[in-house]
Structures are given as C-alpha cells and as structure tokens.
Length: 298
Image (cartoon, rainbow, N blue to C red; front, side, top):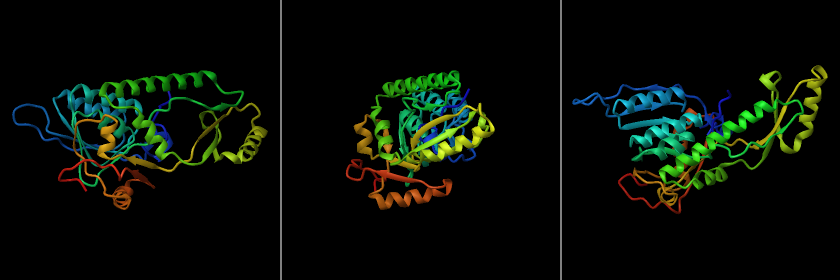
C-alpha cells in the first residue's frame, strides 16, 4: 500500500515540499531523565522524520507515564503524525520545539500538545495539509484500482485530519491559509510510469509538447506502456511561521513561550541557522501581528 505523506511535503520537507517529507535526518532518541519516585520520564528528546518509528517511541514513552517531548523534526508521514497527535491529545502531553518543527510536526505534534513552546530562535513551519482531492489526468491504460485506492487513502487522511482539528478546537483554515501563502507560482506537468519502469519527467505546464515527445519515444519501444499525467505546484520549499496572535486567532491554546522574529530580516537569519539540515528553505511570517509578550519575545 503506497504511503501518503504530506501535501507539498509528504504533509515535512524532503527536497520536495509537495510530498510532505523534508530531507530525511537520521532519527535518534537521547536518554531520558528518570524521576526518582517512579518509572516515568521528565522529557523525551527526539529528532528526525515523523514516521512509524517515531510514533512507537513516543507511544512507549507516553505509556510509561512521560509528559514532555522535546522535538526537532522536518515533518513526514501524515498518517503517523495524526497517530502521534491523538496520543499527545489523549494524554495531555507538552511539546517543546528545539530548532524546528515543520510540516506534519507543526500540524499535529505542536498543535496537539496541551502546553507548547518554542526554544529561542526555533522555527514553527506550516505549508499545508493532506490534499483534499486527487485530480490527475490519466493515460488510457492506467490501473483504476490503484487510483481508487489512492482516493480512499486520501479520504481517510482528510477525515482524520479534520476530526483532529475539531477535537483540539483549532480552525482548519490555518492549514488552508498556510498552503496559499507558500505554494509556488507556476504549475508543473509530470509524467510517470508504473513501478518506475521508465524515468519520470517534469516540465513547466506550458511545455506539454516535451512530455508528448517523451511519451512517443517511450511508446516507440513499448507500445502498451501505461502512464500517469499530473499537475502540481512549483516546488519552493517555503514555510509559514505564524505569530502568536495569528495562532490565537485560529484557536490555538496552551502556548507557554513563543519567541518570534521582529521582522523578515531576523526570520531570514533564523532560517539560515537551520539551513544546514536542508538543501534550501524559505519562510514568511506575520510581523504586523505578534501580540505575545514574555521574556523571550523579540
């Protein structure tokens, strides 16, 4: 069964924000500090992709009585992000962001925490959610069973995401708005072949003749080959870092500390400080509506 990751993510960022997975960093868990009076933990420190392994580590920690997670994550698989989020919500877990919490980490882990905070100079980054539709033009030979399976998986994730936002009392418009603020300005046209039988090819939408020529070349060798055509947004690896005031507008509660850059120039510096973990990354913010005062407020 194909994995569904984050929209323009896969959802985390790899080199493609569209697939909701960011550049995969190796995940590790630092030793936790045990309390003297029981077997629960003071904090679980995790870094890396949101995936099944991270879900299992967090679940084990929470089941043992842990209450605080310190996270550095580029995002990842929306399914496991949602599962982690429900575990966090049900057990009243606190989340502390160290350096960055992006894509599915921001959508699910941060928003789902009872109490949440950013360490100084840390980035919270949104860029959309699970896609609400699957709109591809197919070749006549495409496997409709696979298409229907993908649609079912997307529908399941969409329903779960919307149910999660309703449960925590946050307006899902935050995710929609973050997508609009970070999407690319150009459309791309992509052709793919089942099981990677031939290399995929991506061009600007108005260069469709290059795709047609490529398909003719492939079919001259393999007349019966099936294919898939899809359109998507230009990849820009852009994030939306909302201010405290804007998060409150969407209904986000439980924010303990939220250091925020004073302007775009300072945000660019913060982004540069984490850029070693990514090929390229950009961010936009809300500098006219900060609205949060504490010792860490910039």
